[in-house]
Image (cartoon, chains in turn blue, green):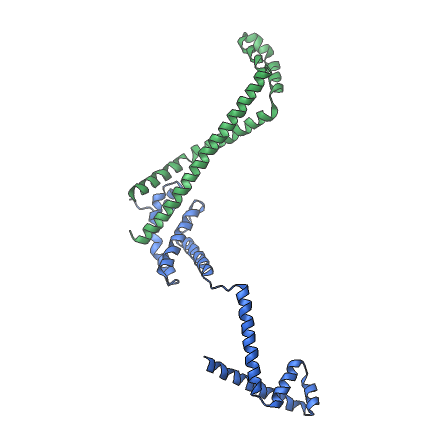
Amino acid sequence: MKTYDDKEVIKKIKNGEIDHFSTLVKQYESQIYQYVRARLFQKLDADDLVQNTFVSFYKVISRFDETKPVLPYLFQITKNELKMYYRSHKETVSLEDSLEMKTEQADFYAEDYSRVLEKLSDEQREILQLLEEGYSYEEIAQKYNRPINTIRTIIRRARLQVKKLYEDSSKTNT
Amino acid sequence: MKTLQKQILKKIYSFETKRTILELIVRISSIFLIVGAGTMVFIHILQKLAEQQTLDLLQLFQEDIETIRMYIGEIMYTLFEELPKFETVSVLILLIISVTLILISIKNFGKIKNKILALKKYWLKH
């Protein structure tokens, strides 16, 4: 077969001589394939994606401006196909499952937190509980008849201890 | 040729075969339908004119040139007045559509012929 440049090939395809499309496939298939293969591990998926890219290009070839280069256009289609591929293969969780998981997580943390609190001193535990109930530092200081800075220190130490205990428990769980 | 290239071309040719067949069916059947509908409405108009004996007016054309020249305007006016308007407009619209469709088909004939030849060549080979 006589060799034509891309412009002539596209003109011929537009004129119904679709056998010339094989020229474009032969010319660009390996470049597109390499690009896709670098992004997809599955060979079959990569093959499908390359096929879809060329079919998509063929579908719009009647509207394609032959004065423009083919390869960037093919790459653009490939990128769109890849986006669609990633979107369709993204792991999804239904809303119901997600809510269930969140409730389970919340239950787990609540359980864990109460266990951690037990390991604190009585004073630390009580102060943290008052804080959760909405008492201010000043109110707690008045209640315990202590300076506010002392209460601040107790709270800071209690929080550090809670954090440490959480980390220890998560390490033992894993 | 590599397997992937073959697969791509097979997909392209399958897609094009389906599209061309569908296009041909739609094009041919729409031309037939419109021309058929136009013919039926035209026959209906003729029947109506025959019932009204309007067609008798055309006997004028059996007369000599002088008589035809004298009465042609009047006869044409009467004929136009007695034509069923809705049906006549319908026939004209259908005629315009069918002529447009035929002209488009004639214009695209080369392209469709090339496509069919390429498809035939491919499917005979594979």
